[in-house]
Amino acid sequence: MKKQSKENALALQQENLDLENPEPSRSSGGRSCSSAFSRLVGFRCLIVLVLSCAILLSAIFWLFPRRSVSEFKADGTVKLNASVQASFRLKKPVSEVVSHKGKLEHDILRSIGLSNSSKVTILSLNQSGASNYTDVEFAVLPVPPDHEISNHSLSLLRSSFVKLFAKRSKLKLTTKGFGKPTSFQVLKFPGGITVDPLEPIPASGLAMVLFTGTIKISISKVQDRVDQLNGQLEHMLSLGLYESIHFQFTNKQGSTISPPVTLQVCVAFTMRRHLQQRLDHFAQIIQTSRAKNLGLDEAVFGEVKNITFSTYPDGKVLDSDLELAPAPNP
Image 1 (spheres, rainbow, N blue to C red):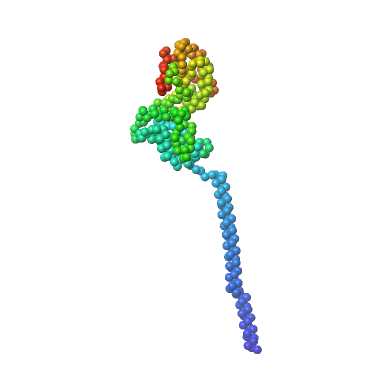
Image 2 (spheres, rainbow, N blue to C red):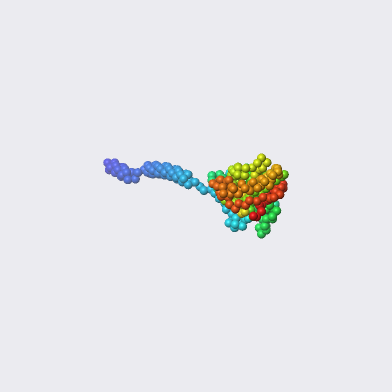
């Protein structure tokens, strides 16, 4: 009896111990489930956080797009000291042109046909209007730097620039890399720049300089209006069947984009009969038309100033270069 009571007491004691200390497997399982749940929740939060950051960054880049290379400028002293400068436009973004700047310089030098005594240096690359256009400014420099470009090279270069401006020749660049160059302009040239925008006078023609005048617009702008200029001057002079008008534009600073322009007007004759009478008639027309801006639309060409009328008594037969002689001083 005592033995049974003792066993009952031990069983009761063991039961109390079990209640105070749960089974290890159950406790471990509970902690494991709780930890797994926490990790799952944390992982989902991390995913949501990453996605939220990605969406936010996309929105920021959409509102404020990453800036690409939008310009290049050479050292300011190079531009200041370069006596020969020009520009043109490429249908390429600046970022693509910058990475091939050396190739572009080589192509320009080869295209204008200068000797090894000169080199081409890019002065600037700027975005032009739409992002896929680049304005290119370049200079032609002597080699070595302490020398000067020879007069012969300058003469060849001036002729090349005039042909490029008048679209009688093209810059031969690597088409695949740079596209088709357009809008060639002369920015600076020693000794000035002169452009003859019309068809050349026949070598057998007799050309007479009628007058010169100054208009306050650039060569580039008057070149764009050359048909209008030609029509108004022909109407003012009342040209005959065997007469044709020709003119030249000159900028003394050697720029096609800066005013003023000296306009030299010439008439070519294919018949010499009654030539002096015809010249006298032109003189009367010009004197009468001075007050009417020589028949030119002032809103388009501005006021013609410094008008000088002149003729050559014996005329001037032009040579094969078709260069008009300057008007003599009054």
